[in-house]
Length: 187
Image 1 (cartoon, helix red, strand yellow):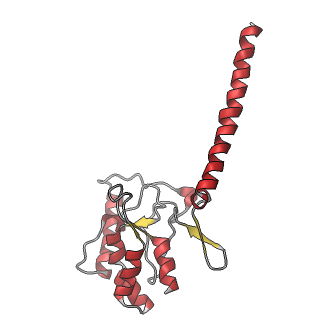
Image 2: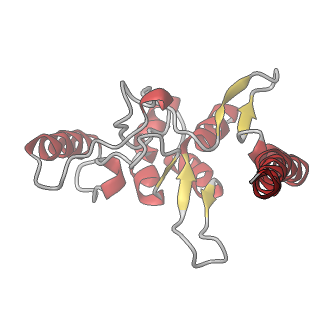
Image 3: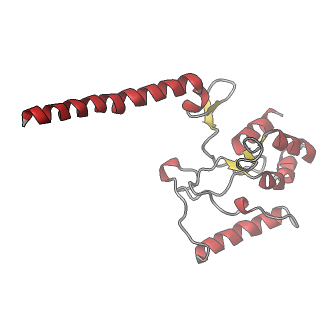
C-alpha cells in the first residue's frame, strides 16, 4: 500500500509547490516587469510623490469645481471595504426614488439637457472610476462657473481625457473622473 501512496504524495507535493508557489510568483514577476504601473495598482501621485488615488477605483468628489463620479452603492460612498451593488431590481420603489431624486437634481443643474443613465444609477461595484462622456459634458458648465473658466476650456480637458474604445470598437468611450479633476487642478 505504501508503494502506491508514496508516488501520489510526492506528486501532490511537487504540484503544490509548482502550481501553488512557482506559477503565481512567475506571473507576478512578469506582471511587475512588463506592466509596473498596472501591477502596482495604477496609483496616481501628486507633485510631491504622495498617492492621491488609483486610476482603477472611483473616489467621491462633491465640490462644484470637480467632475462628479457615478453614484456609489458602496457603504457611505466609495468605501472599498463595502464594495457591492445595491441589488435592487428595476421595479424596486427605493431604487426608483433614488433615481428620481438624482435626476431632479441634475435637471435643476442643467435644465433641458438629457440625463445619461450613469448619472443616476450606481455601478455594479459601487467603485467605478469612469463616467460616460455625455455625463462629463453635462457637468462642464457647473465646473466652469465654479472655477471661473470658459466652458470650452473645461470641455477641452474632458475631451483630452476621454478614453476611446479599445481598437475602436471594444467597449465604450469613457472619462476617468480622477484624471479630469487632476487636469482641471493644473489649469
